[in-house]
Length: 187
Image 1 (tube, rainbow, N blue to C red):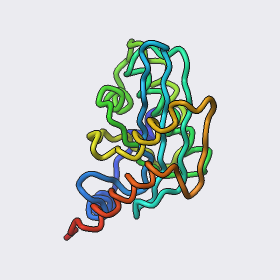
Image 2: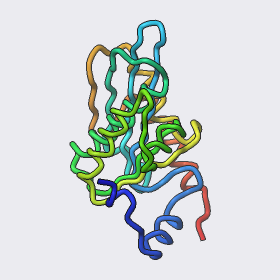
Image 3: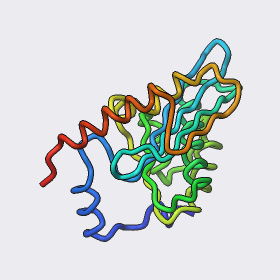
């Protein structure tokens, strides 16, 4: 099942990827973030799909009910990012998230018996639809656009989708990221 996830990269692919990205961002990525509401047991996922230049290709926000904790909220947000990338027809994606626990579980072959095990298993099954998919941990500062989207859409009752645009706060965060990317000197 994990053959595609564990496949080795050619050294030229690694070199090309490393020299085409800034310290905090990867090329061809989907950022995901969640907003968890403990009292209501609900969460909002924000997903921002960007190209290698940092331009928004698409964005979505989705409400989740019966969410037990913040880890489950982040796992659901990651699942939404994978589903969204698949729906958009992407074959090579880098999924970035701020939950190290979720990212480690997705990159591990160990048997998972945690509360989020079914979600992690589902994400791994969905991942088989891609030619190449990577799950990467990033600090919250590198994931501000997806977090802003989740925060901004927390009161929307249903899913919301945008193509080549996003709400103002999300677009502003993406532009700040793009400005930082352009300022970084790559050898």
